[in-house]
Length: 462
Image (cartoon, rainbow, N blue to C red; front, side):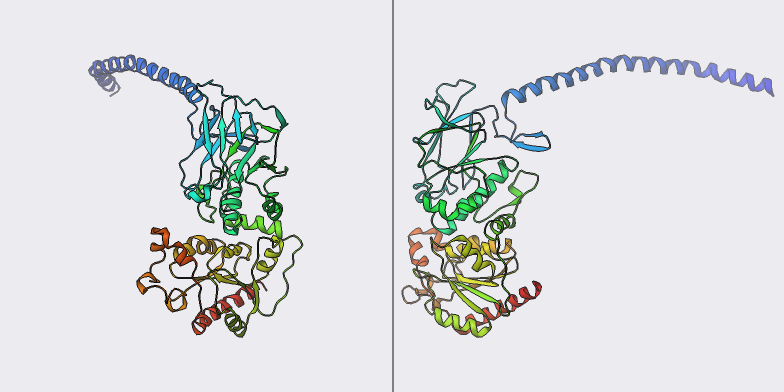
């Protein structure tokens, strides 16, 4: 048996030997073919890494490059190797960057930076740094700033080691809605986007004394340096870099989806800035009845029967405060009145911007005149929801509007939320200047609804 097994094994090996040799030859041939291919691909990868890196560094076309330094993010402009770049792709605003040392001459509003490429002619960019570029009558009141690589022969009167943010307090500033919509909310967004981890100096054109006085405490929240009022300065200021313009996310909006930083903000973060700024030492008073603040108007969009409306509000159960702040009203007082209230009501208009000072959970009722619904929604309605307010809309009926006796009903259709108003600007004054006489039984139902929500708010606060 042992002999038979040995013989059989030997015969099998002799039979398989040619096939084994053929496999070996094929394997050797395949290996000889693969080795050049592997060498070719390895060489290609090495060359790509070397020259690809060189190309990226030389062209500087990487979008908003992020550099990690000591755990902090450093934001650069889209063209970090150029002296001046501008982003003009947005509906609301333009934004220009200077990434190199620059000198600002306040007497000419010219910001100059050396050009490493020595381009001829020099680069020149002009910008009106106010985030409402779509509205020409606003931009007419905004001073133009020129950015150039042409030499500026003004010597540095003041040299800073902190970058500058240059913007305008012109446009429609002096109206509280525009003060926040084109001013402080875009300033909050811009500083958070580019200077969240570093100092910034604010250099402002169209900078009036009353604006600085009224909002001085709020402005100081964005910088620890003195404001540079470019309307009054006479000496040149030198900065290591500068950004000109303010970013906007839309009407009264801080949109976290549009932010590039690791900790995107919302309008509630801006609300917290207001609370920290104006709420120092403020204590909420104890109340047994909810307080209602009526934002009064005396020019247009007036509540004609306001005294009767106030009486109905008191009958429903409110403690009523009539409030009509002016340009001279201190912001601390505005904060105190609104932040201590449970309900705020008013006809659509700039005064409703003060909803920013209400506490989350408070009630906000907007009385919307004929054909103002669209404006009411984008200016104050969406903001109310983002602030976490209980939002109530009172749409004025035709018979409640002062326009009822002046125009046919097809011009007063309440279902048209603003189409005619926005498509034909000649109608603007017609619809914005109407007054309202509220139907008291109808309006009382809305006040009762607001009262119920206010009582729930009081209970939640204990």
